[in-house]
Amino acid sequence: MSEDIETGVIRISDDVVATIAGLAALETPGISAMSGGISEGIAKRLSGRNVQKGVSVEVGQLEAAVDLRVIVHYGSQIQNVCRELQYNVREAIENMTGLRVVEVNVKVEDVHFKEDELPEDLHRVK
Image (spheres, rainbow, N blue to C red):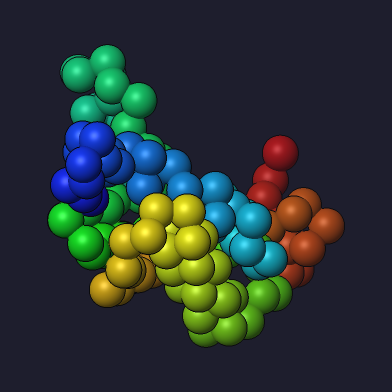
């Protein structure tokens, strides 16, 4: 986002919007973690940049679009968790930056099990 005003220009970087989105996502009940994937790990090693894990954003002058890759808690109602996640991320970005969020896309990449929550047939051999 950039805004021309009498005293100068205000710009909000993609990294700031990604950080806001990531923090809002992790505060959403039912979300266990963000999923970075292999490509982010490679990009971080090659570039040395602090890539936002599981968050991709496109920020324009007045709008933003967000893609999230998440891991949910086992037993959560995934559709409900993802709807709340979309709402929380949209609200956080819009309230903090003034940008209009046009979409929040969510990809559930895994389910997190606590050891005592594993179904009988999924107990792992130690």
